[in-house]
Length: 418
Image (cartoon, rainbow, N blue to C red; front, side):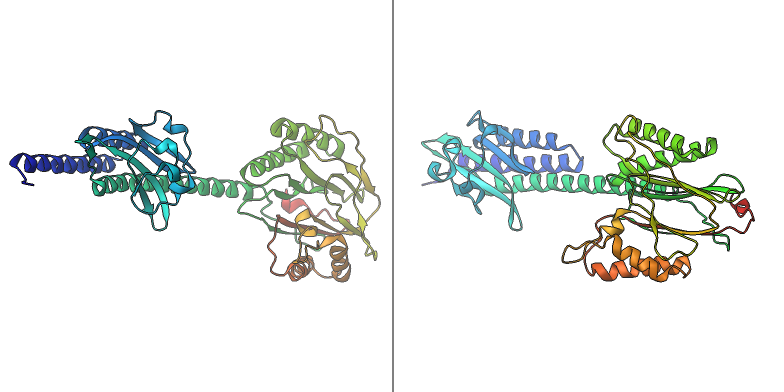
């Protein structure tokens, strides 16, 4: 068969169209057009410039989705890709028995892959000329690959931006949470308070505080919000602000806890709740009062007694009910010395490889054995024993310890903290 000048001219024009199409696509990518615009340009290029009368482009975007099509099956967007299509690794002629009747109107399927993963499938059919059709599959493959890779890069960049934004949000929330904790804790012969805090993630839902009221009274608090992450940090921030505001207005524990319950319920709308232990000591009256709102009962040792007392009197969790169904204030009168160990459930519910929990009994045993040591040593002994118990098992919750040791000698020790 003799090749005529007209044939050469037609081939030249086709190559020129293909080159122009590549240049147009490249320019669109360089101009950072959105994904929808790239799909439209791709559709127009194949529809107008090449020997193609039917096309459907399926792209994996969490699910396989038809992003562009013309001619062919009008309902192609509702079709699902068969296993026969998903297993295609090279340009393949459509077989309705293998690839499905919905794709029978197309001649070939062209997989677009990255390494071993298919990113897209292009279904095309060429215009019929003398009962045959011709498609430059190499060009369609190259054009499709350029578009799909560009869109994948856009998705990657978007995910990176989202991750960076989320990281920034976590950083802000972490900084916000760091402001919740007291910067200075007492460490004198009259009053010593030590804390250990290790969040499960970069931000956690535990909180502790020391709030001096005047020269002879102070509050001590530990709390745990349900849930983790930014919402928990924001709720705990609101809780801290409310607690410190209320502590300046009244020393009545029942009033403080009632107001805290109202604020938490108003802000969290029942989606989160907070367990709280709040105690107050008066150096003049030698009285310790507390209320436990659904929190793990702290261990309380008075005047070097052998066994600790569990501080479990109080109410239910805050933020679950419009009004607390019950409330009881715990009171210890005429005490000059005590030691308090408060903690969150991340300590006692930590598990080892056998899924055993650390438990209150182990915590009590450790405290009883080292109660006469400095608080920093007691805290370290507990954490060392906990880490030895859980071994390589990761922590599954925030870990918080709050220890307080008091020795009342008739001197007002709180002046430096007011």
